[in-house]
Length: 129
Image (tube, rainbow, N blue to C red; front, side, top):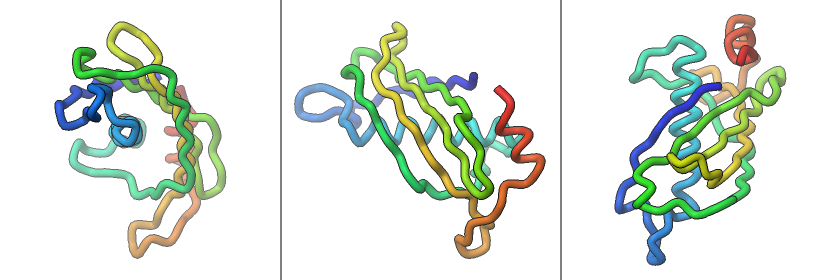
Protein backbone atom coordinates (compact mmCIF):
# COMPACT_ATOMS: atom_id res chain seq x y z
CA UNK A 1 0.00 0.00 0.00
CA UNK A 2 1.29 3.44 -0.94
CA UNK A 3 1.38 6.16 1.71
CA UNK A 4 2.07 9.90 1.49
CA UNK A 5 2.18 12.51 4.24
CA UNK A 6 1.00 16.03 3.44
CA UNK A 7 1.54 19.04 5.68
CA UNK A 8 -1.62 20.94 6.57
CA UNK A 9 -1.67 24.70 6.09
CA UNK A 10 -3.58 27.46 7.83
CA UNK A 11 -5.36 28.25 4.54
CA UNK A 12 -6.82 24.70 4.52
CA UNK A 13 -9.07 25.62 7.47
CA UNK A 14 -12.67 26.77 7.55
CA UNK A 15 -14.11 29.26 10.04
CA UNK A 16 -14.52 26.49 12.66
CA UNK A 17 -10.85 25.51 12.60
CA UNK A 18 -11.47 22.28 10.69
CA UNK A 19 -9.80 21.38 7.42
CA UNK A 20 -12.41 22.45 4.86
CA UNK A 21 -14.34 19.63 3.20
CA UNK A 22 -13.11 20.62 -0.29
CA UNK A 23 -9.49 20.30 0.86
CA UNK A 24 -10.01 16.58 1.53
CA UNK A 25 -10.40 16.08 -2.23
CA UNK A 26 -7.23 18.08 -2.92
CA UNK A 27 -5.30 16.01 -0.37
CA UNK A 28 -6.58 12.79 -1.93
CA UNK A 29 -5.61 13.98 -5.43
CA UNK A 30 -2.06 14.72 -4.22
CA UNK A 31 -1.82 11.20 -2.81
CA UNK A 32 -3.24 9.68 -6.00
CA UNK A 33 -0.86 11.66 -8.25
CA UNK A 34 2.10 10.54 -6.14
CA UNK A 35 0.89 6.91 -6.34
CA UNK A 36 0.65 7.11 -10.14
CA UNK A 37 4.16 8.59 -10.39
CA UNK A 38 5.66 5.84 -8.24
CA UNK A 39 3.71 2.93 -9.72
CA UNK A 40 4.34 4.03 -13.31
CA UNK A 41 7.95 5.12 -12.79
CA UNK A 42 7.35 8.76 -13.70
CA UNK A 43 9.64 11.57 -12.59
CA UNK A 44 8.66 13.88 -9.72
CA UNK A 45 7.55 16.65 -12.07
CA UNK A 46 5.62 14.47 -14.51
CA UNK A 47 1.97 13.58 -14.05
CA UNK A 48 0.05 10.74 -15.64
CA UNK A 49 -2.63 11.97 -18.04
CA UNK A 50 -6.04 11.26 -16.55
CA UNK A 51 -9.29 12.98 -15.74
CA UNK A 52 -11.65 12.36 -12.84
CA UNK A 53 -14.84 10.62 -13.92
CA UNK A 54 -16.40 10.14 -10.47
CA UNK A 55 -15.39 10.73 -6.86
CA UNK A 56 -17.20 9.77 -3.69
CA UNK A 57 -16.13 10.95 -0.24
CA UNK A 58 -17.18 9.53 3.11
CA UNK A 59 -16.16 12.02 5.82
CA UNK A 60 -15.36 10.14 9.03
CA UNK A 61 -13.88 12.72 11.42
CA UNK A 62 -12.47 16.22 11.47
CA UNK A 63 -8.92 17.09 10.64
CA UNK A 64 -7.49 20.17 12.36
CA UNK A 65 -4.35 22.24 11.94
CA UNK A 66 -3.07 20.76 15.22
CA UNK A 67 -2.92 17.38 13.45
CA UNK A 68 -0.16 18.99 11.33
CA UNK A 69 -0.39 16.38 8.55
CA UNK A 70 -2.79 14.23 6.61
CA UNK A 71 -1.61 10.71 5.89
CA UNK A 72 -3.00 9.31 2.67
CA UNK A 73 -2.88 5.79 1.28
CA UNK A 74 -4.03 4.36 -2.04
CA UNK A 75 -5.15 0.96 -3.21
CA UNK A 76 -6.21 -0.17 -6.65
CA UNK A 77 -9.85 -1.27 -6.53
CA UNK A 78 -10.41 -2.24 -10.17
CA UNK A 79 -9.10 -1.71 -13.68
CA UNK A 80 -11.37 -1.14 -16.64
CA UNK A 81 -10.41 -0.89 -20.28
CA UNK A 82 -9.91 2.89 -20.20
CA UNK A 83 -10.36 3.62 -16.52
CA UNK A 84 -9.15 2.83 -13.04
CA UNK A 85 -10.96 2.85 -9.71
CA UNK A 86 -8.71 3.72 -6.77
CA UNK A 87 -9.48 3.85 -3.07
CA UNK A 88 -7.87 6.63 -1.05
CA UNK A 89 -7.88 6.69 2.73
CA UNK A 90 -6.97 9.83 4.66
CA UNK A 91 -5.91 9.58 8.30
CA UNK A 92 -4.55 11.88 10.98
CA UNK A 93 -0.96 11.08 12.06
CA UNK A 94 -2.34 9.32 15.17
CA UNK A 95 -4.09 6.82 12.86
CA UNK A 96 -7.60 8.27 13.21
CA UNK A 97 -9.63 7.77 10.03
CA UNK A 98 -10.76 11.12 8.61
CA UNK A 99 -12.07 10.22 5.13
CA UNK A 100 -12.46 7.42 2.61
CA UNK A 101 -12.62 8.28 -1.07
CA UNK A 102 -13.21 6.31 -4.22
CA UNK A 103 -11.90 7.81 -7.46
CA UNK A 104 -12.79 6.60 -10.92
CA UNK A 105 -10.37 8.12 -13.43
CA UNK A 106 -10.30 7.87 -17.21
CA UNK A 107 -6.90 7.58 -18.85
CA UNK A 108 -6.14 10.23 -21.48
CA UNK A 109 -3.97 10.05 -24.58
CA UNK A 110 -2.28 13.35 -23.74
CA UNK A 111 -2.99 14.81 -27.16
CA UNK A 112 -6.28 16.60 -26.77
CA UNK A 113 -8.06 14.77 -24.03
CA UNK A 114 -9.45 11.67 -25.74
CA UNK A 115 -9.57 8.58 -23.55
CA UNK A 116 -7.38 5.61 -24.37
CA UNK A 117 -7.01 2.03 -23.19
CA UNK A 118 -4.58 1.20 -20.40
CA UNK A 119 -1.38 -0.32 -21.77
CA UNK A 120 -0.24 -3.76 -20.67
CA UNK A 121 2.60 -2.23 -18.63
CA UNK A 122 0.23 0.24 -16.94
CA UNK A 123 -2.13 -2.61 -16.09
CA UNK A 124 0.68 -4.64 -14.59
CA UNK A 125 2.01 -1.72 -12.53
CA UNK A 126 -1.38 -0.53 -11.29
CA UNK A 127 -2.76 -3.95 -10.40
CA UNK A 128 0.06 -4.87 -8.01
CA UNK A 129 -0.29 -3.99 -4.31
